Structure formats: structure tokens, C-alpha cells
Image (tube, rainbow, N blue to C red; front, top):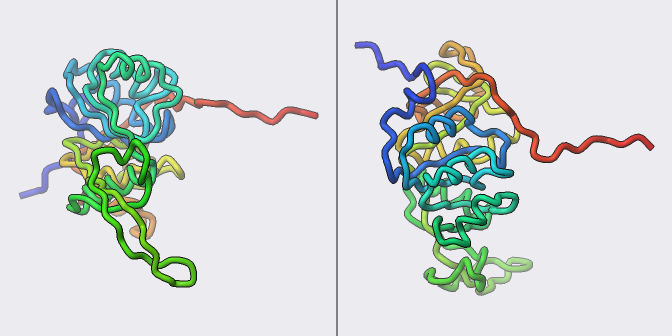
Length: 244
């Protein structure tokens, strides 16, 4: 019996089983590398109560900020809230719960979730508001010149999701992926940490067309693929060289 195809006609079909209250991971950094069609499909679905796990929840009223504007987000877990007036307003009103993680901790929480690790201890954010209410322990670790020192660490939990929506430069029909430079960011980790990974690919090629040494994410972590089109590719801050 042939394997079921991973290719879907569009984002709406790939996210047809989205439900209220789902946990959604989105790759990208600010407005760079966003799975634009996935965001639009989630917005159009009318579903609500989402927990959004992403570095930031959109920027400049664009990207994931659309879900905030439509009151579809219950909780945001991420690293950055600057440049997002929609999130700021909803936070101050108490309408959206926000859980901030230092960026390195955030990435490791996703990696841990994908690896089946329930939690880990880190010295990052000890003694700050991030540490409030979290378990703390002291560990002996190598210090200068190998001399052991005692370091306070807090417990951080792994992150998982129902869906990961990520964008790839190239996908083959099995789901092997290549990303475009830094737009790779959190996407491979999120693909490993989600029950269903949906890939918005700029180009879809036949299986085997990507050299194995060039695969950034193996297709075993990908469940659904569709062809992305007409990307906006918003530039958040355009910087140009000025003539002297």
C-alpha cells in the first residue's frame, strides 16, 4: 500500500483539524521567515483560545499580531515583546497571559520538548522575575581553571505543541527541508516538538532532489507540506548606506 502523501493543496487544508485552545508553535524571528499563509489560515479559521509559542508574537501590527487583533490568543510564550503595540495593550488589560523566557532558554525548552525531556536546570535568570515560583537548586560546576564553584540554577520545563507552522526554502515530497540562512532559527526545533508539523515551502521538489548533506531537517519530523505563494517578506527596519 503506498504511503499517504504529505502534500496538501494549501494552508487551510493542512490546518483543517485546528481546534480551539490548541498550542501552536511558529518559526520565524520578528517578521522574518514567517509562515505567512499558515498565519492567515489560522486567522481565517475563527478558532480561539490559542497558546502561541514563538520568539515574538508579531511586530508592527503584522505577522502573528493579526491573531492578537482578532482576540484569538489566550497565552503567549516567547522571548520578545518589543515593537508589538497589540500585545502590549492586551497584556496591560490582562486579556492575554504572557510567559517570557530568555532567548537561549526558550530555544532549549523547545529542544527539550522535542527530545522528550520534561525539564532542565539553568543559571540563566536566577534572581530575576523570570525565576519567581520556579524550583531552584545549587550545583557544583567547573569554574576558572577547572576549580569547582557553586551555581544557583532554576528549573525550566520543556515546550511542546499541537502544531508547528514553519516556512522552508525547499521541501521534497517526503518533507526533507532546507531553510534560507538565518530564517532557519527555531524551526527545526519546533518541528521536533510538535505533534503535527506543517511546512509552508517556497519550492517543492521530488524526493531525493536535495542532497542528504544539505538537509537541514529530516522529513520524519514533517507531517504536512504545501506550496507557499506571494510572500510579503516584510522588512522591519530598512537600513541603507548614505552617500558621504
